[in-house]
Length: 155
Image (cartoon, rainbow, N blue to C red):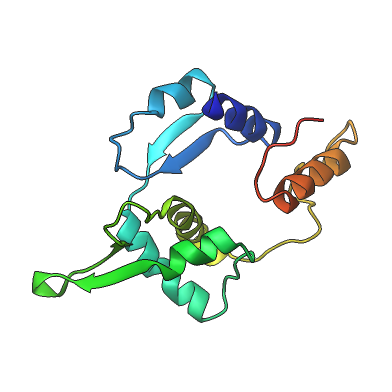
């Protein structure tokens, strides 16, 4: 149900592929495919995404929305150095600790890489050459979605 709702929203914006971590072994890849979206496993681990996102955030190349859940998950991350100098980052190993939102945001930042330049005009939403004049509707819909904290709003 959730994947079908997200797939419908993604198709509105011409998105045909999503990325995710390898943690669950792609158990939901078939569900994305059934809904017309291909699932691709991210090349980086979640810990690598955290480590790659950190310089983007510290340098000011990326800014995050003021979201208490995201803030709580990011500050709850723990960085450890393993044998051989390998670094890993994960949430605390207690039942109440979660990092799904932080993992998604950091993965998106890393995927965006050097293309981090936020276009506030929303011109990119409809591709800029919509013969039916629906670009403004898509921009309004995306703006409402982002302002709602990521909840799908059915109009």
